[in-house]
Image (cartoon, rainbow over all chains, first blue to last red; front, side, top):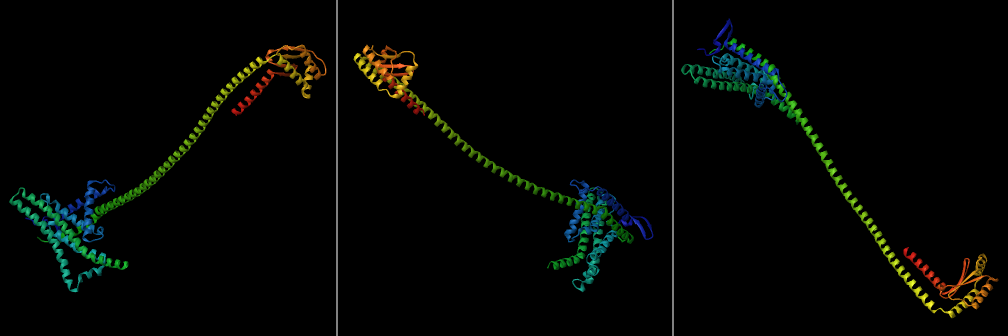
Length: 234
Length: 258
């Protein structure tokens, strides 16, 4: 019994292996991009719009609002990363309703990759907003003693991100597989529905946590900005 | 449950590519469309507000005009009422004047009628008085009275003034007919001669005389030639009195009419 779609290998050449995770990911990517392209090709700015455009607009503006509520003032800058994170994970988890589908998020490689992306995105946005030194200074706050703890926290939360998503999705798949062997009728369907819900919640949690991390990194520059505006008004 | 590091790297690359593609094909167009729609709605709202303001302005203007119109209407009504009052007063005055004129005319007509009646009564009375006088004098007249009348007549001829005398002479000369001498009773020859003599004294020459008897003259003697008459008779006196009263009455009528 395969625990991860990584183990289903289609082609390999030394270090390079094309497994089910990658293939499924590409499929999902293709689906998302083509879908987005098809819908946004005929966007209308009138009062009457198509249902698909309406759904898309609601999704995008909803994500925008979520980012803003967490504390990022310019959600348009982060929606590319955070929104894609959410939509990709949600889309990966959505198709578990299909039989024999194995979500890429059930692979630790994928979740680790996403966690690493978040791990890298946090300093990227932090440095972009407040500068390299100012960002580094956040590691020694409130005191220098906190530096190792801050680094540990950074790494551990990245690990937690990866493991949480992987664990939830993988366990969902495992439960369904186990239940199929015990009671092949009805119960797996309920579990699949539950898995769908869990998948969506996990997508939300993953992207929200990523937003919180980025927000905490960017907050330093926001504080500075606030201080400078206060000074200028005084 | 192990990590395939090639898969990890590949997934990171996949994810970044997906981020780029989604940015290009999803977020940007959708957010742009939403922004554009918001702008459009904002513009439409602004236009609606401006239209509303314009409409309010127009409404105010219209209301103001309406009020002005009402005011003018009231003024015109008041003016019309006042004009009507003035006209009514004029008509009343005119009617009063007309009524006054009609009343005056009626009064005049009534006065005229009264005057006519008075006139008639006066005429009748006058006629009656003269008729009685005439009758009384006729009954009183006699030959003796005639004789005295002749004496009086002769006295009158003798006492003729110069102006009358000239007129008498001129009339006497222009008339070829004999001088007519009328009396109520037949004159005696003596009386005729004394009259002829008196006339001849006045004229300074003799003439032809025609003596006639006319009871209408009641008593006395009348002498007439062309355009000239000399008389002393009751009839002459009564006629003279009648003429005098007539003339006075006419004068009184004219004064009343005026």
